[in-house]
Amino acid sequence: QVQLVESGGGLVQPGGSLRLSCAASGGVFIIYTMGWYRQAPGRQRELVARIDNGGSTNYADSVKDRFTISRDNAKNTVILQMSSLRPEDTAVYYCNADVLHTALNRAGYWGQGTQVTVSS
Image 1 (cartoon, rainbow, N blue to C red):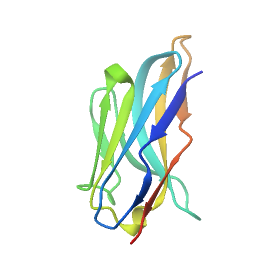
Image 2: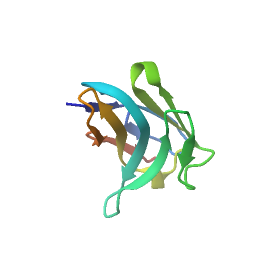
Image 3: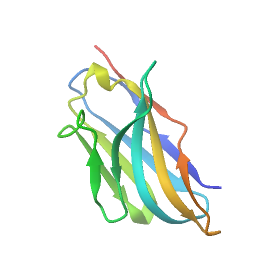
């Protein structure tokens, strides 16, 4: 069973930085797109950034020029470097991956979520 394990959330002051990491394990054969989504209280889950296995990226307009997504294909890991954080970035951040399993089943998987709180 594929598992996504996230780390790196926490409390940071406005203008600060955080780095989120997500590692996939458990029968991974190919990972196509990896991404980060977030969900604030009372709001729907939204895309933050994603990166395909060729390195092409997409960002939400609200995080462009502040967040950077990258991946290490050898380690099945995706990183979200967040800077110039704002209170409105406060949310639970979820890792997502489109995975081809070694049993040749393809499916999307979610991490458990990590809390990011931006507050003074």
